[in-house]
Image (cartoon, rainbow, N blue to C red; front, side, top):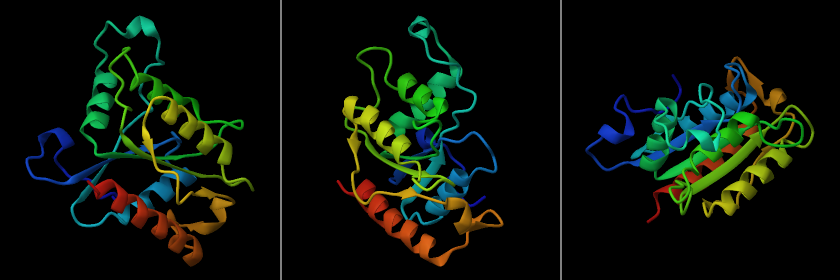
Length: 195
């Protein structure tokens, strides 16, 4: 596993570490964005732990569920609440964010008055085989996060176009792309660790 994920979940850790909740917007196991996310997670410095937030099993949000205890909802809410920062790595679906990402954003913003996004450090990058790099998805995700008062990292930006050409054997194989992603990772992890 390329993720620097502690064997102990965030909520059970007694020592001080910077905790990053990683959201992968594609539900495909072989997705471009999963490979990019694994590369970014592998760049985490000492003192940073990255934990993926699984979003594929989340029931579609409806306000009718606000008064119920939904185990999958409680799991992701707990992960996000315990995280010092959130990294979203997502494709673009039909010129916007994937439904699974929007569903998570909504779940973590509810019930009313209990949003987990307020002040949460969050960064968004997108990768796509297309020539625009998923920019619409990235901007729409950031727009939603900003509307919920998240602390969104604006620069450096990553909208990785023709991303499939930079990958081989489940890894980022293109040196220029790797260097570009590493620059983003250094900026993100430094920002996440800052007081």
